[in-house]
Length: 107
Picture 1 (cartoon, rainbow, N blue to C red):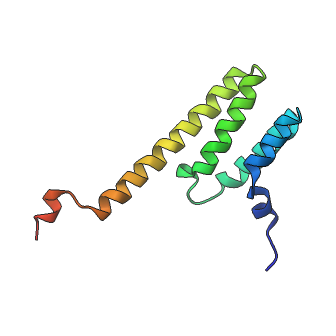
Picture 2 (cartoon, helix red, strand yellow):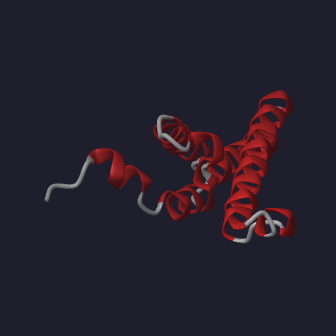
């Protein structure tokens, strides 16, 4: 089965970003992160996608290192919101598996 170009983009993006930063290619790292964010933002679970949160955080960090604090703050805030949603969903899912004592006693 042929690999979708967007799947190839997402495979190992974090390591590629690190390589670009190590090579002092901040523009290349920013471009890659923007592509990854655009792709992950289209997914059904974008609101709680930890990969999207990581990409937003990485891009925010790059912007912060370039002195673009307003852009950085916005991205870092978005990353935090996504992480909180993911945590809330995970704890809700865990709660569904282990109902509260009140629910267990309703039989």
